[in-house]
Length: 273
Image (cartoon, rainbow, N blue to C red; front, top):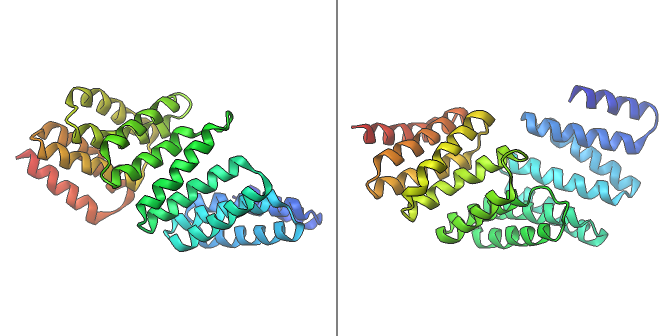
């Protein structure tokens, strides 16, 4: 972020409006990931204003997408949706097909956050179809993971299982280890719900290794692991339930969510008796 700030200052001194806009957007994205959301929003909004002044359609669209993602981090879902809607309109009007896919996925995120799961699944599905038409689009599997997650939230576990399997195939473990680990964790409750215990241990071992080596942390990982534990417990499979709970406990602890951590730890203690 410091380097990008220096770059922005140099561009401003040189009167390079385009360079200043790019530097501010880059810094806004970096600050979003660092958790400085006030700073991120300021930089991204300034960048968007500069790109609008310049009439640079690509810059405008990318900034709108970045602002939508920043709003998702702070769970301001209506704001997230508004930027995604405007970004999609811009991407479609200007023919930026890859950005159309990104904005559709972001609309799915906003709809999921607002509790409109059917609409979210529709957006994610459109994003997946669009990405498959673009040979160079890098993360089709990640989009499939989002689609599978909302199918799971809708209770459509069989469909979710097949989508997650497709996502695993799309993401090689070498090129997308974090993403592969995420969608593979999402697969666990699908296996538990359908009683596919013969597949469980191999899948669990790979997931546990991936989580350990990547350090990836996300609330959805914790929630899906907890759901896997509940299915396993209902099926009379305490070993598998404990394995899933260990993932949930680790995730909630890393996320600092004490209420959810206590819930998972109590369930783990109960199963240990």
